[in-house]
Length: 217
Image 1 (cartoon, rainbow, N blue to C red):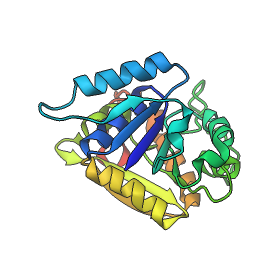
Image 2 (tube, rainbow, N blue to C red; image 1 turned 90 degrees about the horizontal axis):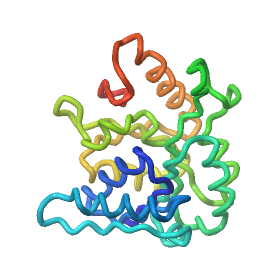
Image 3 (tube, rainbow, N blue to C red; image 1 turned 90 degrees about the vertical axis):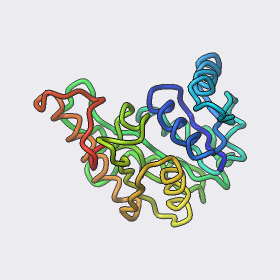
Image 4 (cartoon, one colour; image 1 turned 30 degrees about the vertical axis):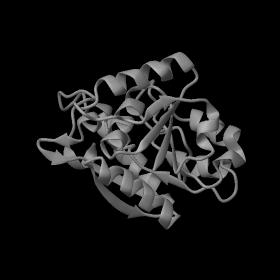
């Protein structure tokens, strides 16, 4: 598959690493073309011996032929990206990995009760563009390696389009992860609450955000 990742941060790096492990084509789109190019160079440099990863930086045109477009950006940036790309996303599945947490207080979510960041992004996307929630319960550190204590990392997947969920499951499974289909997009509400709870208890557990319990990361 062609996997276009919007973003150049830690989660973008980890998802790109898993995608390349599954031998998918990766395109990186960032606000800074230089950062996207640097990340592509780093991913090629850290590839296993003998591997020839197909990864490069691109501009927004990379979304037009992508099977998956991963929004590796914080909420609410994903809202603007979905609206900006509009019909260019036709034929692609849009993957929201964000958690709409109030990071100033870690005391709640910033979306109204009864909805989720993923559902709000779906409302901004062009008609017919399926949105899938995935990877939001994964921390970047464990996701980079794909395993926790020797076990494949769980990736919880929610979406209303069966084919879109299948593509995300293929991305996760081929990259050495354990995809778990949890149902329709409205399940993103629980997934985002789960991730928020995990973040909120890190300090009390004496952990940091790069630590992981298998089902929560």
